[in-house]
Image (tube, rainbow, N blue to C red; front, side, top):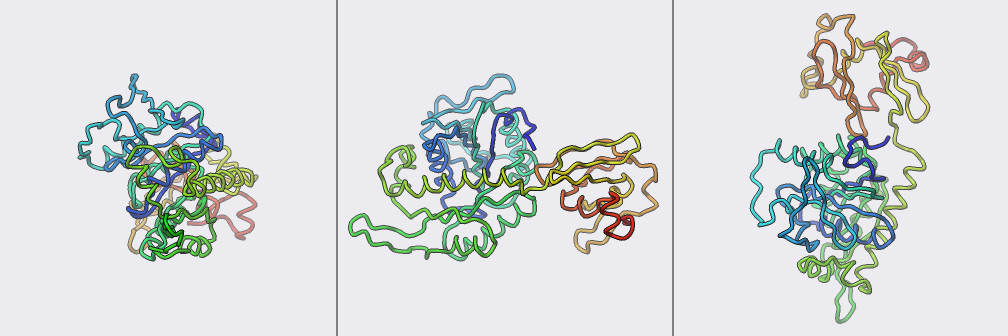
Length: 376
């Protein structure tokens, strides 16, 4: 399904880089991965989605005086070493704190998605803030992510939190492109001996457990930290360094994984959505299935907090409160995982996941499999 926002309309793939927790080196992985992808011949963009703690400008060696060019509603990213990038740190160049409530941060993320003039890109990497909060949900709903990768360190506490991040993206029907294990073993520059400071192999074990790809391990190397402090990513500064090889391998594995997923078309999404004059909602899915839904059944099936008790999972909506002749007034796509449907009775807070719509499909084929028409 093509990206709808004009700011990202010319981007082939959009990949979120998450971590679940802070301190795992996600931003340094994102920056060096972006440059490794560029070295492999791809047009790359980098979005710093950490509104409160942006770190990319310093690590990218951005010019703090130039900020970003603004033309009406449009924002133009800076470009350094062939990478286009945008960050809140470019808008607050003096390093002052961003003291905003969540709605303001969400609004800025929406601007980054819709108003940044990226031009043609093969891939846009979005460096997420830690956790599973509003920013992640906004991006999942509005960016039509091609997939996500999760960065973790080998120790158990990091793996457990990384698992929560993975679960969130799975819940939102976003493909998991793989897990990256960062700080995986320290190689002494004098004797060459490898010391597993934070253990090793945890990332690959987690990938096997969750049946997702393992994209590779990045060693704990002082060069990565030093180059980041200098504002010259290691992949740019020292292409002969042994520490660069894992990033190039990671970039190759990631891009091959995205293209394989695109070829196989594993993600079930609507190809077309149409509300007929009869009021019935028709959905043509990308696996060839033709779904049918009546507005009355959809309204009674809503799972939002107004209609279903979040603690007991019991329905709060009264059947006799829904008019038999209710109609659909508007439908909005919500990322790659659902539809936000508005009804003629004024209700419009429900998000219907694609998987749920397939479960309650009322087409003749699905109804016959159920042995009856769908009942709420």
